[in-house]
Length: 113
Image 1 (cartoon, helix red, strand yellow):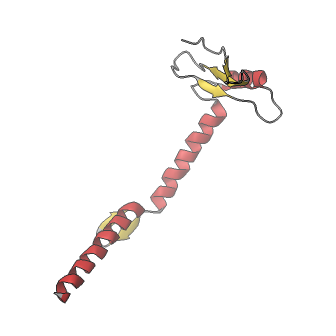
Image 2: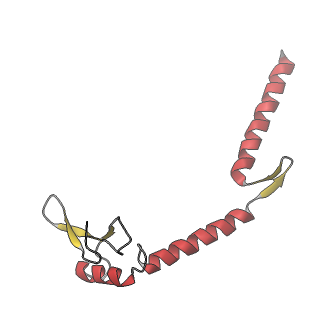
Image 3: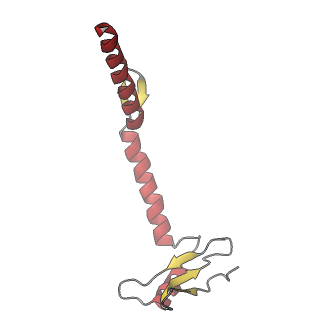
């Protein structure tokens, strides 16, 4: 298993270094992958990532993920609508409309026979 905070090079078929992998914390079992960024070299990027890892992911990425999930949950709640069948979210409503359209189609077919 990798040592915590010690990155190792990921080498491609052409023997070029593609990035680094590193165990971010002692509790993490899966490594995180690091690549160069804008105006930062690979070694400095690995150092920054290591300094920002209080949990498995670097803290700015973790906070962005937490915030985006919160926004998605709140936005999802705003799109719950009332329909004749009760309270449904958008996907359930589409399913109900599809079933209702099939019922109408079957009634029309039955009337034609």
